[in-house]
Length: 430
Image (cartoon, rainbow, N blue to C red; front, side, top):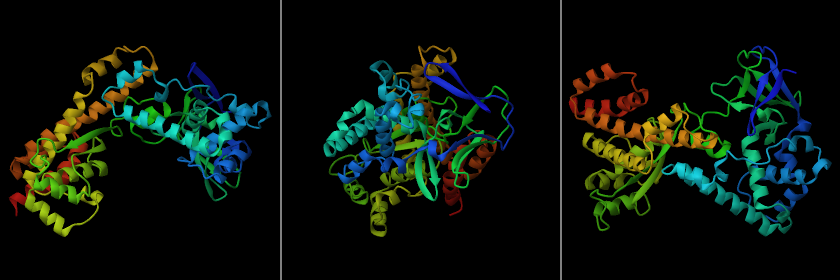
């Protein structure tokens, strides 16, 4: 064998190399017969009952969760008993099970809403199944949540004989996450099995990692029970853009009426979950703010010539310098408001991590989670202020400033090139 398991604590383990591993070396092979797939699950007795009863199944993961519970109930009579017996009995690091002690540490974080909605969805789905298939009551809601967590923390999306499916792959699901990836996995129809191959050399005794992909920390945190320290490029925060204090805030405002008609709903506020970069999600937020900051005449022209859906309007590009400065002010205000909801400052969280002043891994993950959000929000505060300053420069002063600060913040450079420079150029060379 090339691998062995090492347990670091009661709830933390990893896979390590038993010997030196070369690139492109197959280090694990799991035959199809040992893989629990969604197709296998759908063919089971309980899943057939659920299908026949037309019970609402919200997630494709539910089929495997139901099948897993059936097989667990069989005990040693199940072919998969050796695998099921080593699955975790509980998930103490998953926020769905956090006590108030931990949840209070997340004050201000949008992860609290994600946790509450996940629990609500799981409860609703369980109740929907039980309502149509009463025999499923033999499994409690807690059983169902346990099974769904097993699936989401261990599942692989594979294609078997041309059919896309999900699968629980023994041993392969023991590898922890790391970017950049050190291994690659796939299902091969010719060999009828799942294999993991090294991408880089791995030394004897070193941990062997999988990559779960690039994700915002809230997904790692809520779904897997960990948060990454260095994840700034992928972290996100929620900004709530409101019309409070703007000329369109009054109920009888003509501008408010036009905006409501354009976005096909009463307009008061809108939430945007965005990263600290000027990518698609952020551009939609800017587009929304630009439309909100338009004059009545600009809105009327937009309404006459553009009857698209709100998603298209949110893609509205730069209008002019005055409009962009106002839009930036809305974003800066939203980011500052979101920061005020937290009970700790960025510096204090960084100090807690540096001095290791946390009682356990859950406390540490809570600190990392909220710190990542706050850094994204602070980026928008700083970015908006910097952009507003640049938009009031002459074109040549702006170009000089760009040369001095180039590559200091690549995310800001993208916004500068796509928005600030064209606006200033248009004013200088109409």
